[in-house]
Image 1 (cartoon, helix red, strand yellow):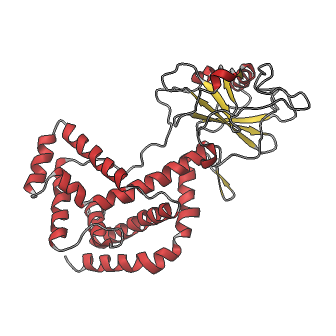
Image 2 (image 1 turned 180 degrees about the vertical axis):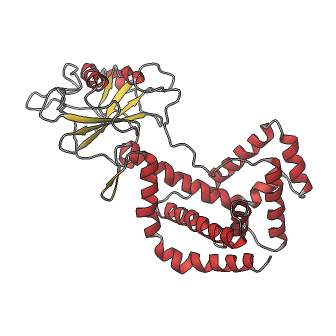
Image 3 (image 1 turned 120 degrees about the vertical axis):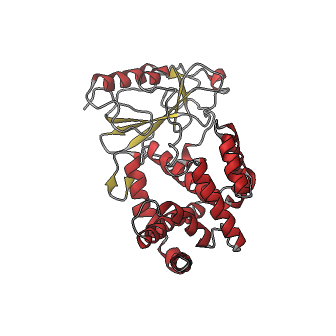
Length: 355
């Protein structure tokens, strides 16, 4: 047991990502028992009590700094040193979307989240508790986190590359054009175009056509399960968000040093960058929804929620893996059986018999 213990925090378990919304500090009043409040002399944040801090997690990195080390003890000492922010000043302080989360784990298994943030255009760091109280003098967090490299959100998922090499782009544009001529368009309710596009990738990875077809079907099943689950959770992207993503990709292509090669490849296929991306618009609807689901899962883990069922996950990669295996995919069994499998069988049959 470490010698630094805490009180004054409500350790009722880690809040969900939704409960960790940004906000200003709440005003407090003097308690009848004389407890220090907002109108009392500014108290230190941490006091001794019967609850020992056993673990520290910083921004999703578990057991950091490691328990029992000098860095661990120093971190807790730093928590003891900070004070409540001045009442006049703190009404102007607001935690924005970029913040660091520190999760304290107690000996009884409970957890408490502390939010470290720096206001826009400000230099000073503050700490906010789950009940909205704000403390100043929290700059010591920069001794543990490289702010320039800190992840305020998840790393982009592999496979969401913004653009391809010119030769690959030409192959993709040619396929998209052929599908349009056949009256087959990218859609979340018709797997033919999505399956053909996935086959273009899988064919390079497998020795036989049948293996590539099976791999394409498995990849699309996982992708559509994630997409449909994201929709159920309210993560459908808006048309504006899709437009913004397409504009972002267009801008990056045009800024590329080999843009002339991209332009030539698309021109040879009878299309333009903007038209090609619009033809594939539904792909970005799917990827944006899944990115939102991924980001929400990351935020849950960052807030100290590291369990999937009875499994305690050591890092976010493990958490995301078992979130999909134990939560998302089982929830999509009915969708797969009644909707997706018939669509995939049709796309599979057409692809197998069109060569």
